[in-house]
Image (cartoon, rainbow, N blue to C red; front, top):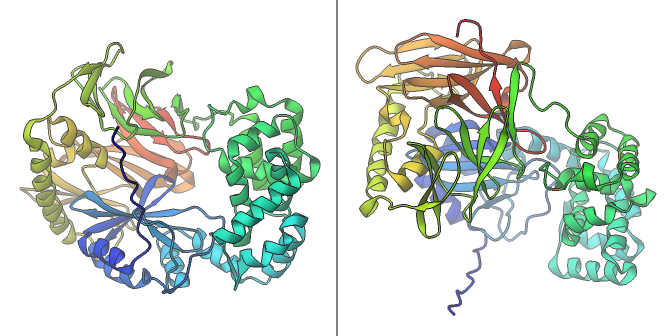
Length: 544
C-alpha cells in the first residue's frame, strides 16, 4: 500500500505575504461568513505596511474576539487567505502557526475603520487599568497543581503556550485529577472565575480554554450530562456556549436533563452580564422562532452551515455538513445523498443536481434516487475559457465603475461568485450569470447608489434608500440587499435598464444576510444564526 509522506506546513515568512499582495487585484474582509468590505487594489498598498511581521518572536494566544479573514482575489478568483486573530496576530492558510505584526495597534485601527472593531477593543482591554485586577483573579483561580506554570503562560503582557510547559501542565493536571471529567471541572472553575461578558475576554483566559479543548468539547459535554459541580458551572457553561456552534447534532434539549440545564443557566445569571444569559438560554433551552418577522422559515442547517446554495427555480439545494440537501417550504431539509467531498461544487440543471466525488462528476435527480456517474468537461476547456473571461470582465468592470465612483469610496462590485465559477469549471454549461449580462454593476456603499454601466449606452444610477450589503446576479439583472433605517432589511430586483422592484422587507440585521436567491418568483435569504445557518422566504411586497 502506498504511504504518502506528511509535508509539514512552513513557518511564517514575510516573503509569502508580499507575494500574495503582489498577485492580488482585490481583497475582501470576511466576518461571520459574509464578505464584509471590498479592499481595492489601491488600498492593498497601505495594507502591505500593516502586515510587516515582527522578527524572532512567537505569537501569543488571542483574546476572545471573532477571527477576521482577508480573502485575496486575482481576477475574481481567490488567490490567498489570511486569518487575523483578536490580538492581531496573522496567519496565511499555508503557514504552521500565527505570527506577530510589527504594529498590531495600527492593524486593529485599520480594521476598525473598515467596520470590524473587535480586535481594537481586544487590544484596548489588554492595556486597560482593569487588566491588573483580572490578571490577579485569573492567577488566584488557577488549580493548585498549575500555579507554578502560570508565569510561563503569561510573559511580557502576552499569553504564551510553550509546548514544553503546556505538556508538563497537562500531565500535572492529569496526575492530580485523574479522570477527564475531574480535569474539566478544575479548568472550568478557572475559566469562569472572572465576572463580566464572556465575549470580552483577556488573552490569558485562552489558557484554560485551550486546555479544555485538549480534553475535547465532546468529552466535556458528555461529562456535563450527569451534572456539573457548582464551582465549575460558570466556566463549563461558558465553554459549551463558545464551542457548540450548530444546533441539531448535539441534542442538548433531548439528552441533558432539565435540572442540569437550569443549573448551568443559573450560573450564567450569576456571571455578571445579560449577554451571557441570552447566549446560555439559546444553547440550553432553544432558539425560539428562527425566522424574522416578515419572513417564512424554510430550513435550518444541522451541520452549522449551508454551502453551495443553488436553485432549480422551484426549490433550493445545498450542502449541509456532508449531506446533499433539498430545501423546500413546508418540508424543511431533505437529505438526497451523502457526500465524501463537502467542498464539492453544486449545480441544478435539467432536473438533476451535479456534484463531485473523488471518482469524478456525478448527478442525482432533484427528487432523489440513484446517483449516476457523469463524464466531465473534456480537456479542461471550461477552466481555460473562464480564466480568460474573468480577466476581461474584471478589467472592463473596474474601469467602467472607476469613472462613476469617487476615489476611495467603498465599492461593492458585482462578481460572478465563487460558487458559480466553481460549478462552471467542474460541469461546464453556461457561463456564470454576471458574465452574461450586458451591463457592469456596482454599488457605491456610502452614497447608497447602484451603478449600471451598459457595455453600449449611457450609465445610470439607481437610488437604493439605504446601505447595500450584498449584490448578486440574476439572468436579467441583479438582486440587492439593502440596510435601511429602523433596522429594516430590503431586497430589490433591478433588471437591465429597468426600475428597482421591491421583493419585500423585514426587520433584522442586514449583516446576517449571507446570500439571496430567486426561487419561484420569491426572494429566499440565506441568513447567519448563532447555532447554524437558516434559509427563509421573504414575504412579497404588495405589487411586486
